[in-house]
Length: 461
Image 1: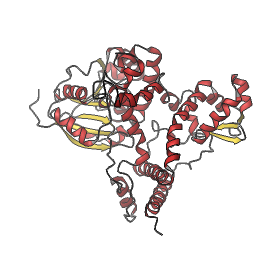
Image 2: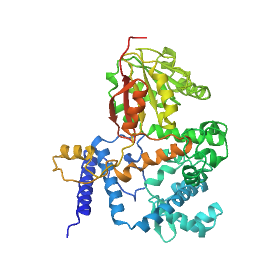
Image 3: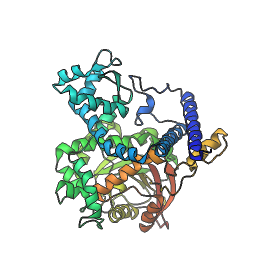
């Protein structure tokens, strides 16, 4: 009896894992182990950039595992699995907020584990509540149960230790669960179910506010600071790849303007790698004071010499930097907004371009899963390795490996009626602003760089 799908997925997974193992050896990386009590270089994309083949092999492995789970798991188990996922988030939050994560990282012999009774005594908690919470985290791969009711950190959970990237990224906004619960009502029953306004979303319903999500966050400083920290890490995850995977030397403009550039981390990394550029970080008035102080501390010579400037600018207003001298970066800006507002932002920058200028949109590109066929990335891996080209039937959007892209799209939808756009949607948006996409640069990250220029180059303004 032929088991075509199962056989194809098994062959694809074997190929992906063989490639992963080979690329790790070529990169002189240590073996992966969940038993390890130290971080692996691959654990933090803000500090380590894998080779392209290693990045693709890991993504393909995750896609195969997800498709195998979809094929093998019963629909009823899958339904229960999804319903219980929200508890996993609450369990990891509990370990962080109680201080258990940090305590487990500081014990003399962290690999042996700590009895729940000790954790309960230390933090004045109920051991009977802690056991199921810790076992849920263990089932999700965040901790290890070293013996009955004793738990230790594993390699992955070390990202949640105070000061590490996962701790900063893991922020859950108070009321987030209410926001999720509101989605079915907002989409199917509310008076706003056909509205695409950023002021008529699930966020306004869940938080009982007329304010735009961003305005509400600014008015709530207890939320603003951790969200800013979260967004900083989210951006940092793609920075090494942005610097390495885009041909910056081909830019014909001497100045790069980072619109909504936050604390200036991306521009700083670009200047480190390409010191011939000058740069400007633009952001709102309430952000640039912090950015200026950070840049004056980290890059005092560039500030003094005029290589780097920080200025206040609202991207819903006309772009003041006009002409052939400037190219522009919009990172994680466009997905925040519905098409009408996104066109206003992009149009303001487009009207400032000279014939040599470029707009670099750094955002996710959602891939429609129209069928299950071998993707371009799978084929390129096979060609590079000299392997034959069987039909692996991997989803065009890489299945479960694309959950971050699709999850982000739903999150932006509920917050502000934004979304992650497909290439067709990007082309429509860009064309409507008098631009054309000159090339899309895939990154070793969840994002891509969508390079745009004037559709019909005009004389220098």
